[in-house]
Length: 480
Image (cartoon, rainbow, N blue to C red; front, side):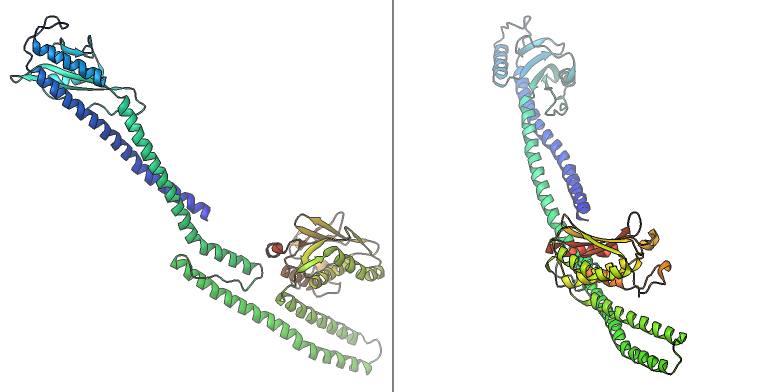
């Protein structure tokens, strides 16, 4: 969410800065140019005042006999040499009164001609068009020379814009640096703001993930962030407390009910055995009742084991996973021999990982028992161990009938059994118990078809202690 919120804030801030920056840049350029134009207006006004006293119109513009005209020409020449600005005073018909540099004439077109024509009308020329840093142009300003109320000549200045454009560009660079600094400050503030807003959300997400992965004691500290998120955190904690309380009550009920039913069921089985002594040997109903009673006792035992598995905390430690697997394969070998199933092991003799040895052994017992139970005589059950990056993989592959894709999505659910295997003894809780035992220690249990036939159960145990939480999350995702 922060990756979506932060770019939005940055784009908005950049838009605001640009919306303010462009008009400000235009205003700076206009102010710089206006200052130059005002200077040129003052200069043309001064030259126009001097030209008012020139009454002699020279026939040859190069050599005049009027002292005032010579003074005016020398003023123009010094002005041009000092400022590198072309200046000229022209009669209404375009003839030269005085110019600098020599031989400069009234521009035939462009800003100079426009300014000249406006000054002939008896008013100062309008401000020239805006000059931009990358635009090669000149500034033309003209003022009329008025004598006895009539325009007798026009003063025209034609200024280069190199220094003006340099000043504008320099001001723009300073403006850009200021905008960049403001943008950096705004981005830093946006980071702090989004961090302050998102910190409770991240904490809430971590707590939610913890509860989803079995850590029901995960809670959120409701002491930071906006008021709305603090209220949400308090509501979440209340909800988590209620959920944990309800689950604890359910677990306690299952455990108590299983425990309390065992004694009456044992007494009932004993009475059935006493009743069978008074009936003829081989009585079918008594045998059927005894079988159902034993099955019910096994279900109660599995329910109690499941409640304990879901409630108990895992005793994680660095254990030799290969040694545990080899030990359980050896323990189940007599059963495999009795069932005439080929039980074998392959893999390293040592492979360490973080697990609860007792829980892992119990889960392996349930998985191997399930594989032997459904594998026909003469078919193999192969157990292997392989180190895979950050985890140790334990694979139990059998040669049984396997499961369909739809059945693979149900395997491990409580009390679920395939309709094709209803005649096989079991409560349907063994794999659920295995999954609960493994998930408590951060391990996962998944199932897949085995080639060419059968079922493949894969247990993955983290090799590092920090992977336990991640493994628990994967276990929940794999078995929603």
